[in-house]
Length: 480
Ligand SMILES: C[S@@+](CC[C@H](N)C(=O)[O-])C[C@H]1O[C@@H](n2cnc3c(N)ncnc32)[C@H](O)[C@@H]1O
Image 1: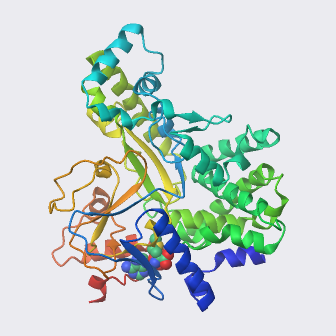
Image 2: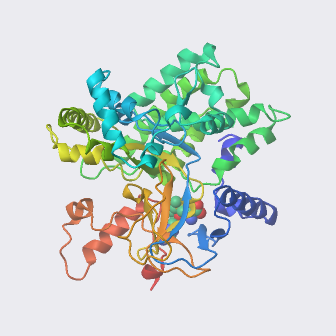
Image 3: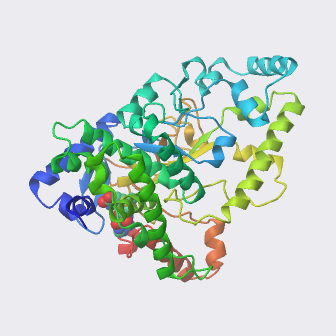
């Protein structure tokens, strides 16, 4: 490995190995926590290995209370989902007008009569409902990216968008499109990698000495802090399919090799990036995604509208979503099964050829995946005190409420994750979540959990946690 890849590969023991580096790392997270507006709620500490970085409460939280929310540093909408939801490239907030979204779903313009019906239906909804769409605030980029407002566009530019913008960089347009096509045909998490490489390129170019080693080290630093291993070590072979581990490793490295060649063409204009244009660096980056990415699901404001629309429009919309569900389940059978760690793509696996319209309602969401700096520091516990909410959880629970059922106000309209207490948490306690889908169909199918001593469940846990880089769970319950 070359020196910059070795630097990038560094784990917590290096990050916290000297007081200067530990101080820099802690200051970085403090800054990130402040940036998300939760400086009074949480702090990061280093617990030594194997548990590494961990998040702690700096105030008491009641059961049901929101601890913090976080927008992804890097996020993307899944390609298939673009057919049913038009959302902001940066934050996955629904863009345009409700009419635009209906036309996307119906794949045609509304007739004058339908447009009047839609307006009448909108008028029956509370006036703040329209805030679920960016409306007139919507802005586009010459390359076709769309944003829910100028703020998101500017943020995307600050995160390097212009480096991979076909309008700002027409000489690279062909290479950018080729890279994206390859990603969509193989593993769409490469699209997220493209955004990270664009970020690194931008940071390096704006450094006072762009070709220095220091410039690259500074540019990769915000990604270096994540827990990581090489992609080919993180991806587990599919035991049910009797996938050969060595064959899988070879396949992943081959895929990276093809992708990195396309990447080199994209970044021809940034020769300073050459030291990170290799399979090892790329493999670490994909390993970071696989281990830390969070599935993003934004509930669609369209759901409320559908109830009020004349039935021909509603039916036509639902039929389209049903078709989408069926076609996505077909295409999923060809994928590589390693989607960059968005650990629970909740709607991809529906398998009926003629999906039920009610299932279609459930699938009408914006879906993607992202890398969240603070969220990624939360450790797993088999008796967690917090939980990540995506779907309906876009809604807040009032601090005084002790029941998770009583949801009120403050709708979250973009793709931020919401972490909420599921028990009372005292100031100074570690915040933990479960990485596993307890009681899920997946768990039942794997082990047909029926034993009385819980042995199967323990085995299921141990096996599932290995996918998250946990060979021996060090949570309070398992350590007992
Ligand atoms: C998403 S990261 C969480 C933050 C991590 N501690 C860090 O330092 O970046 C997941 C990694 O944290 C460690 N980890 C999390 N929960 C753990 C647990 N219950 N027992 C042991 N290791 C754990 C494992 O190394 C795992 O791969």
